[in-house]
Picture: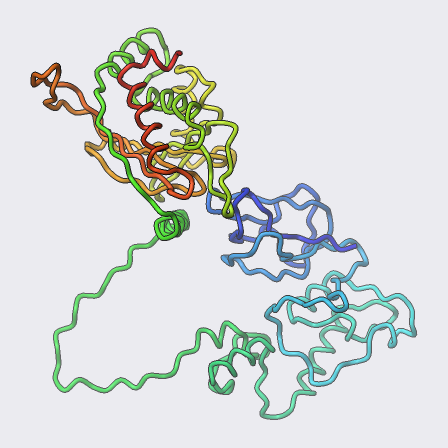
Length: 444
């Protein structure tokens, strides 16, 4: 039985994937476990291996195409197998094919006298490329060969009425909807057939009137190329900004104890301890005490997360990545520092695995090292909140009624109002501020 090749789901919330590259050509043999294709999700690029051995046939997805998860995009055929026909009564997906012949040819079964008919791999590939139903090809000797497919293609050409424009059914439908004559469109399909992409890309010729007088040419605009990662980031942030009801809470905290804690912890550790590591520790403790802020909004429901998985926003050349520290509520400071450093290094060298980017329940975005005082971050769905951290800077504050200079830190909490209301968010932020100003409370 032909083995279906489908667009895999590489993440819980994934709806589509992008086919980056076929690693095996149609009609070629592939072995189980060998790389078959490269697929991209909104998180990471992955190589997908063949699940069985056989001949790759019936490819229906092009490189660079976005494909729904679970959709069949090809088949792997064993020796003697043919591409499957659509089940009776089922609705066949609209797939771009070359135009069918005006009259059907007799089936291989009737041509072969009723015996079982097999198909050679090359014939299967040729038929798939031209969108031909193998049942319509007469077979000699009970096996459809490439010569049979070639002869059938020639009969299609001969059967086509003179002057009739070759076009796929989908192209004809689109042309009719657009009110476009097929004869005006240059076809890119087999034998010059007009395909749907040709219709979609066709534009009415525009007659440009000459200017009454010469004008100075404007400087040409230069388009800045975007990587696929940047495009995905832009899409996801746009969706979040336009669909998530954001609100923000801002809190200034005294970072004196935080700085003293870092110095003390560093003196006892061979791993570099940063302010970000301390913030991960106290944030994980605060989230464990306020689980609603650690929840997620999934398909109209609030889902509680059993573990605190902290995402750390990391700037890379292609945009922004958010690797995740899983189970942060149970990690010690030294382990947090070690894992955080390893994640950042993998992010900056492009070596993050899918597991490194999956399952985050809360995100910290720290721009303090860039001299930023404070900022508002965009929530990373399906998470309920994100914490934006500014730089630690000396400011004049009131201490016991008198002005004093203290190192102050500004925290901005962005929340999804569907999951967290103002009171819950404020209690969480108050807890976090208390842990920063008195780190020993994190050990209670």
